[in-house]
Amino acid sequence: MDRVMNFLRHVWAAEDLRNRILITIGLLVIYRLAAHIPVPGINADAVQQLLNQGQGGVGGNLVGLLDLLSGGTVSNLSVLAMGVYPYITAQIILQLLTPVIPRMQQLQEEDPTRYREMQERWTYYLAVPMAALNGFGQINIILSQFSSGTSPLTFTLGWNLPTITMIIAMTGGTMFAIWLGELISEYGLRKQGLSLIIFAGIVSRVPFNIATMLSDEQTRVQSMIVFVVLITLMVLAIVYVQQGRRNVPVMYPGRRIGNRQSMPVRGSLPLQVNMAGMIPIIFAQSILTFPAIIAGFFRNSQTPWVAQTAVAIGDFFGAQSPWYVLVFFLMVVAFTFFYTTVLFEQQNYGEALKRQGAQIPGITKGAPTQKYLNKVLSRITLPGALFLGFVAVLPFIVQFTNLIPIANRLSILSTGLLIVVGVVRDTFAGLDAELKLRGYSDTLLVK
Image (cartoon, rainbow, N blue to C red; front, side, top):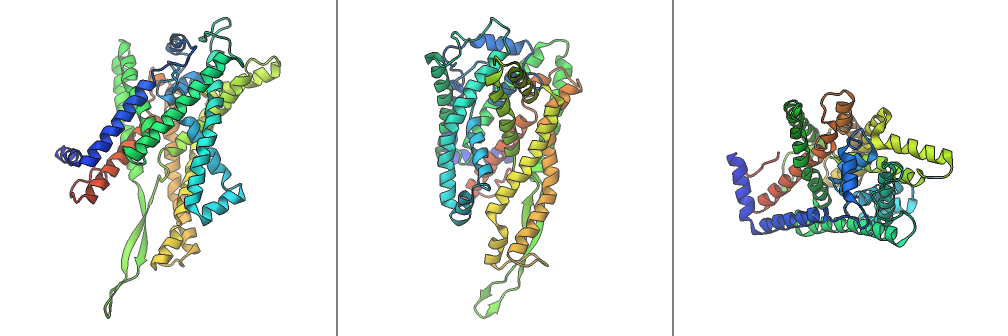
């Protein structure tokens, strides 16, 4: 505890760090206030009643799943109901297109800085139509959950002015959330903007979930005990896996000092078990919710087989099928390998070590070194990928086994908990690095 308090005192004493933390908190407060602004023309109480009836939630329909991912903004149909997920989906699409389009791949290899600038610009361009499409599809999905003759809308959904106004409001809310994330990255805690936006949504649901568990007098004790035990075990497991590393031995050349040549220095190259962090789960969730959103457009089709297919797709990708759990697990594992490979190839340790004159014992410099490191990374990524997959599907497993009656309220588990732990660790690690640059010692909180 003394170590933590000493760390916080040093952070608060550094004026620029203190200002950046206060700016970050202020922007997150603005984000959470905006999350309570409803979309025009929506009866939010009707949607909230739908979720309270137990039809939503993990393993229920897609409305509950979308509410989980958005940090509760779907339940009140806020203008921020989509969060920053359209932007993340746009990032995924562009990253997947890079190996397919030769010009983009060539630009990535020849001019990485220009490639990143182009990718960032086109991500913004693509996020706008993605947000509009997601918004319209999300409203269709919510409408499909209501019985015939009832609707949370005060107007008829179609190509009319109220519908267009609603879509513009939801698209504007998404772009506003993205803008707040960029402001946090620039003026607040650097490189943490979008992660903190998602983090704020998840954490904001924790008091509501706990209060819901405590409201049931018959199961409150059992629910809280299981909840606390699961949270504790998951935090320990996440931290343990996130800290896992494989240290590859590296020989660095000695230095010449005058007429003397020092001996080679033996070092190591640490390779993380989970280099991708929580990104694969976010990617998988964004991809898996997209088909259900598209299917929502065709649920009311006049052609029977089209409507039936749309309903089946919506049910499958709305977490109502055990097969969804398997697909979710496999996609998280696949995205973990994909994202890790992309990150590692961009760093190109083989050429970097060659330029330094360093060498892995028994491995030729250059391309063979990179090939060897890729092989080692693939082996250690496998347990990390399987762990992420298990973390992602844990709430579904809890519900299918009927372990506890609060599965619909476990949004802090799995993805949420992984994001919370990851963001907290990254934030404290960044602050610790900033303090070390200012000459403070013995402030390392996250090793």
